[in-house]
Amino acid sequence: MKQERIGIFGGTFHPIHNGHLLLAAHARDVLSLDRVLFVIDRIPPHKELDSGAETADRLKLLELALMDRPGFAVETMELRREGKSYSFDTLTDLKAREPDAKLYFLMGSDMLRSFDTWYRPDGIARLATLVCIERAGQAGSEAETAVALREKFGAEIILLDSVSELSSTEVRNRIEAALPIDGLVPDSVALEIYARGLYQPPEIRAMTGKLRGALTEKRMRHTAGVVMTALRLAAENGVDPKQTRIAALLHDCAKYLPKEELLRRSTDETPILPVLHSEAGAQLAAEQYGVTDPAILRAIRLHTTGDAGMTKLDKVVYLADMIEPGRDYPGVDALRSVSDLDAATLLALRRSLTHITERGFAVHPATLRAINDLGGSIDE
Image 1: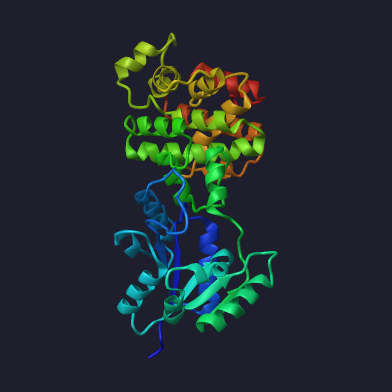
Image 2: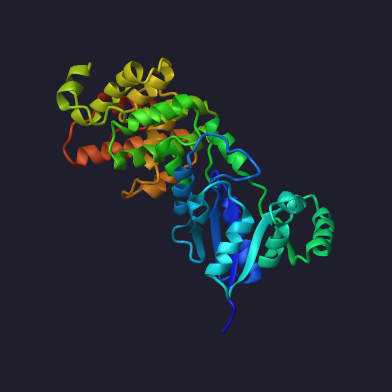
């Protein structure tokens, strides 16, 4: 019987990102691993965790990232263990559980260089083959360290080329600064981060927590998709990312107000119920979420209708609401493929107009003004 080969990839995964996944896939392919276990730390002995996510959050993100990835699995034994997480204890437990398997312990260059200071490095070397992912630009230093560790502990060490220099610190910093993380983490992870306000500044986390109490889980997932899409559009079009984050986050904050309150708050002479939550949302954002920036409030107010003189921020939020990943309607992929912001906004407005008129509903005058202002025609 062929001996099973299991990769052990430990870390805080704070958060999990595509660099982790690339590294694990690279090791799996090169070493012909049957499985890779992602062992999530509870209390890593070598560093303090930054704030931004609890242990349960990190675990949820890891589970989402590994979903539908055959051969990759979450291992939670360190979360169940009291005290700090030591690799020797983890490998001992895994060897007892998988006595016939060959274990490969994945680590980075920094970990290899500090290996002889770890708890029971001799025991780790007996239990598993050490697999070091070399850091780009430091060729040679890992090889020298490997020679010394082989001599000192009899360790079996394999050096693999770097496949990604992405770090969790970089991802956290981008999230905090409202910069897009598309392509840095799986979409499912990004959506969970935005839906729960993870790794965000305190005021954004507070807004998100309050918003979660006002929206359904499904609507919150839509909101997360709008935030993710809007931040990408903002980066592509030179729009302030922090204004964008708040406007996208709060665009539907009044979605579930009672009809009577929506009508009471409306200033339209002929109010159209499906779009009333936009104006009410701008009011709630100011009253209950502390938003004072008129540009943000305007973007919230126009996110369903548009209007003449739309700013880039207005267009970004309007378009993001139309094309976020959860949207699934005929023509949405074509709309997503339009790179010019004005052209995409006009196409989205035209699509909305067609949808409304085909169903015999009333069209808000602001939508007609927006189409004309962008050079379109309501008769096209």
